[in-house]
Image (cartoon, rainbow, N blue to C red; front, side, top):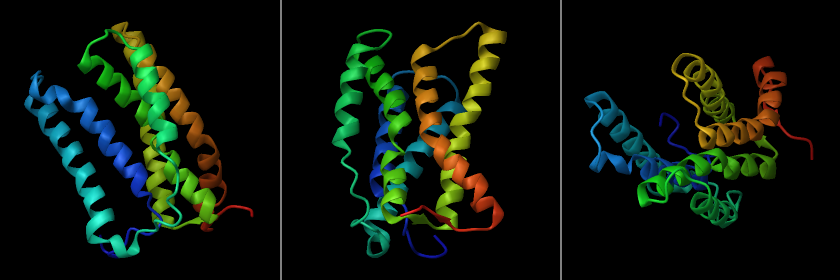
Length: 189
C-alpha cells in the first residue's frame, strides 16, 4: 500500500485464495457458530477481494502480467475432480469445502512459478510467502494438538496441508539461506 505497487505479487494466486475463502465460507449463510467466527470469515473474504481489487484495478500499472502466466486450469481441473471423488459427504457444501481445502494447498503455485520465471523476488514478497507458508506449517501443531487432546483427525485437511508444506520447502530453504542473511532472493539461471 505504501509503495503503491503490487510488483512481484501473483494476481492469479490472489484470485485463487479469494476462491478458496469464498467456497470455504459459504456456510456463513447457513450455519452460525459465533460472532467471532462470523466476523473472521467476513474479514478473510473482504481482505481477499480487496487484494484482488488492488492488484487488478488500483495498482494495475505495476502488476506484472507478463510474468504471472501460470495456467490455473492445470490446478482447478484436478482440484475440482478430486473434490468430487474424495469428500466426507456428497453434498454441495461439503464438496465446496473439500474443494477449498485442496485448492488452498496449491493456490501458491502461480506465485512460486512467477518467482521462478523472474529469477528473483523483492524482500516484501519473500517475507509474505514465508509467513504464508509458516501459517500452513503451524497447522501441523494444530493437527497434533487436536489429535491428542480431542481425538480429531481430518485426513483431507492433513493430506492437503502436507502437500502445501512440501511445495513451500524449497522456498523455505532459500528464505533461510539468503533472505535472513540480508541477501535478495535470486534463483540460479
